[in-house]
Image (cartoon, rainbow, N blue to C red):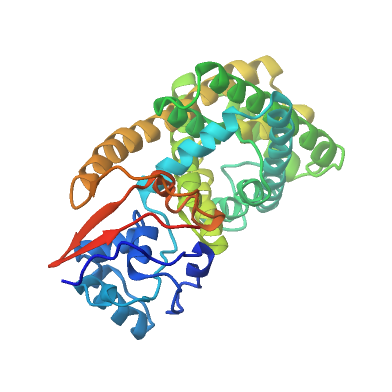
Length: 402
């Protein structure tokens, strides 16, 4: 095997991030390339020899480089192509979620409240567009969609509804049901206090509520969006049906809804491209709307609109028979998802991965990575000198400079 290199030239991390399907050369050395992509899904597959079936790329030259790296031939050169995965591993997504939870906990109440109001308005845009389509196809009832089959009509409504979460993802915002995932993860990691978590939940919940009320009143009720049939009858019957659920049914529907919302947010963080984030938002949210699950923030808008249009139900019934059980179910849905993810995958798998091929010795910590790698490889902020074993070759990895 080639002698270990102990001194490598400085490496500019930004130069390593070429487009995924372009096998360009990086000015980084082989040892730096491996060190930079420690924790990257593609690199870990290459090191353990499992990528030959998983890494299918139309670019044959890049696949050949991957095979070279797998067998240890490419790492003996001064320069190697950088292979960038278009997604983050679940382990690194969990670490990113912890970071987001910490950032949210450090926000001021005013900032949380303002961003939450905007998020409630964004959810309202998706809801009003979706119910305009569904109401227009109905015979005045959510269960009697006369233009086409009810399943297809619900799918079309569900295809539009994710607009709200997409705006929040790309424009920024504070969504209570998303914070129901971020805050527990940061608490489990012991990075924030219970007081900080309660602050985030409190102001995001009531900020979302106010945003939904403002959108419902000014951009739906005062605009007379549902003032005429079939939309008026549709919104009346939809509101009564949601409020008339018994507690158990509303609670369980809410558990399913926020599990899908958390899955959507998890995949959004995992994706490294705008297109990936788009579809990560769309599929799970479309599914929960089409099935008919209950989402507390969406119901803040829907049932407020229904009450404004004089549905035969009261505000007290809305809060006591829908909003409370749905909110509790949303929280439980997020907690179930997080406990399964954080304890079963992250805690156990991360320890197992760390014990496979890597040994660590004391060395000065590396400098903070650049923005492009911050969420891809969060471990690099404290990476020490590392020895990696692949095949019959031993490669010495040293901290690099950004």
